[in-house]
Length: 411
Image (tube, rainbow, N blue to C red; front, side):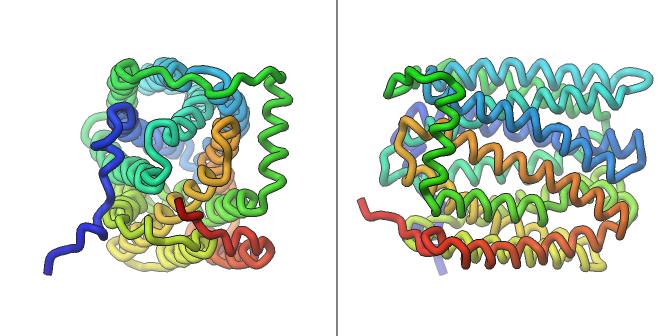
């Protein structure tokens, strides 16, 4: 029986917008490269220290840099040409990954350098991401926005599937340095795609200081219960439920595998998310997005809990994929609520807050998972986090009825 076209991801935004195609293609390449570093840096720290707690700390120390970069990048996105911002961010990101590669080639790699350069990488990512997110509504129509966001999630999750698996194999068969060098090269490909785009200048001039502009973004957020809901429910899911700091220990010690096994664990959520995104054509027909987000986060938490208690690697990978699929759907629902609730002159700043939450939450979650694992073991850390995130989602939905009941407006 043929699959209905309405079930398959809608690629119309790629056909209709040249600049969205360029943005999408460049980011797809650099996102795969970034995943090599996402795997290589924790693997290197675990190899140098043998400590899951230190792996968790690697994520935690990146959080302040990411937070500052996100808020600074959000203001820039509302006051400067967005294309220029993410062009230069790619250039300096390439510098940081080149530094990681050089350090990995040293006779005695420095843990301090890994911590410092990954923090710089997080700061630059914080500047880069709000401009990209805020640019999308300018490149596609309002009706095409859910499809464009679904494509973005598909691309990022496909990178999250391909990149970590490739990273594990590259590290096992070649070296950590090679993984970092490949990541460096992908940033230059992304820069070329961005260079070919048209400028995306701000639509409204903003005379107030950057500090006042940032406060204005938070003031708008505080006035919208639906926005508070999407941020809180994601923080809950990532801080409690994200198990990635545990993957080196699970892959090497719990499942008695190699660096390739660690790569498969990192890749599994991305594979599930990619499948969910490929079959996301039906998302445009979902209007009760607050309720849909809540359900997706509950399913995410249960998937993570199942991964934690599974005695078999294949089942753990399947459950991580199941959790990743739910997370991908949640990301599309949350991004649609954000973009359709926020006026363009505030999208950069609100996107910055979203980026800080989406990418900062897992880093805090790394530290939480590493700490609990050190005290009670990796299985308990992952299982308790998954159950906690599922229960937390239900509590947040109950406390924020305007978020729970948010309905996508007809256009």
